[in-house]
Length: 144
Image (cartoon, rainbow, N blue to C red; front, side, top):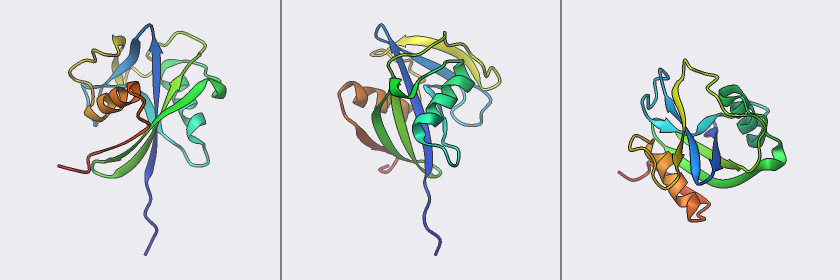
């Protein structure tokens, strides 16, 4: 029997003045119209920290040094597949975020971290809330 495989995902928390940067998904086929944080999948032969740095550059044009990242949460999630998400907070970056993927994102805005939009993806909302409380690990989608 082949060994089970998980899909590794990376997520980026950019927080400034008690606000978090969120992007609204558009024409992606997944959670379109809902807000998320900058995110993506880990490519083969790529560590999670470099994957989130790559995604930040591709999606919002930022330059991030690896030592500016802090792992703040790990999420084991089940939806149509199983995935493990690594959530990083960036404490320092170069550049001003702007939407480099208008074909996948139709809004990039800062929101008060304790007052997220109602249409924030539920597992993203969960991780933001738990991370603010110092919790480093959670699960989502396992219990109906």
